[in-house]
Image 1 (cartoon, rainbow, N blue to C red):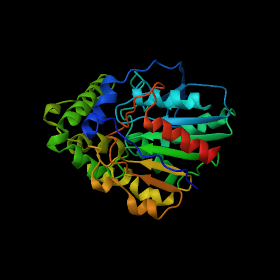
Image 2 (image 1 turned 45 degrees about the vertical axis):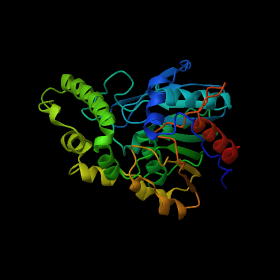
Image 3 (image 1 turned 135 degrees about the horizontal axis):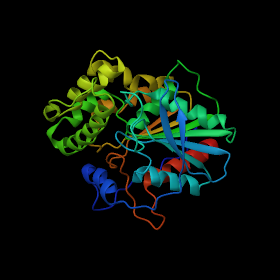
Image 4 (image 1 turned 90 degrees about the vertical axis):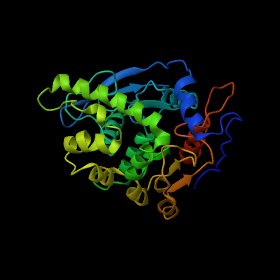
Length: 322
């Protein structure tokens, strides 16, 4: 079923998981693709902003970014460029509150909010422009994609025929503990700084319902999720949120050909985030664990300015879907 997998070879000076994670974020510069933004309504009277990058194809890929990302991140732009070049329309979407404008609800998004991905898929397919759809997800967006394909509450449209996910924290509890370690302090601080800004934005719209008192004492996802995410979304606590929102239990139920790539040196991923048993038991899922790659890294230097992750995605979708 699956095409031959090409092993990733990191550049000589970037064989460290931290360097591979940080380099693209800070130093990868790509020209902004031409996006046509469209706002779509959600069933709960909110909105999601999607960005079209069209080639006129009858096939499209919906791209889901990671925590506190957006459609302008270099890893999204790189994927859009590679897919457009290969003859696919690309539809990267912004999680609620990530498009540059706060959303209308006190809540925005969370790791298991696959229902918003379904809303985007449904909207794209209802245009009538596409016979074939595929999903690509990074980190949190990969977790959402796997959950969506494995959930049983809503039928997955048969026109969704493939998925590629990178750097996915399939076990959110273990992933949160991993990021709380001292060696990952630089990432945790950055995430909390961005999340704090989102809380401030919410305070302007909902001053009686949310506050930032004592935010400076928060230093982990456990503390942030207990205080904000769990109560906003009706979870008992952070552990309950992580349990219900982890993609690992859903992998066995996926029926769409799916390629999951988690690098062994990813500083964000704990051992529990590598679903070896679940993937081995499901012929629709192929789990690949390169020695190097970092978190959403997979850097390559070439004249096309394409990363290994982009080349693998195009090759996988071309072979699986044709």
